[in-house]
Length: 230
Image (cartoon, rainbow, N blue to C red):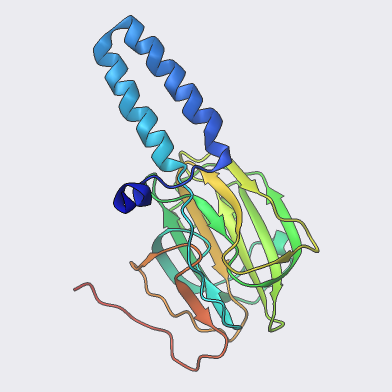
């Protein structure tokens, strides 16, 4: 029973209307031609799977920056933040996490602190794996100060399939590391801009779990990590 319940995770409220829509279409397909109906069943099940919203166990020590998204680390490099974030022209450590259509898409706050800026920018829908997607694609950026008075930013970026970015944060809002703040439909990317001097503790190709995987530690003196596929 515990194994079954672990698979039946809660569904994010953004997904309810889509699951109902898929179910109605599936019923119509059964009435039209039964084989098509079974295809609809598979697609409805995938829709419910896509919008799953499992609980996560977040490390709560001061100074930790946790992943805002499930996915794969696509790049770890210094980059100038998008202009709308108003973080200046100096490069900052940036960690890019790419989410495919099978990853959990509920996004989580990477650190405890206060939101100081939320900015939506319309744009294109290029492949989110491309470097220029950070500047050209539709996106929603959040700038916040952490409990240790560090300034970080995280940006939800739309992709080829993603056409809807949802963010429930507002300037002045107090937040806790790991709490849910939004979702992107369907498959995309989240960039995290660390404060200057922070060293990323993840490597390209590593998988992240939103709210659990530690991306950086303000208190760490460890050099930036490298990884090997084994």
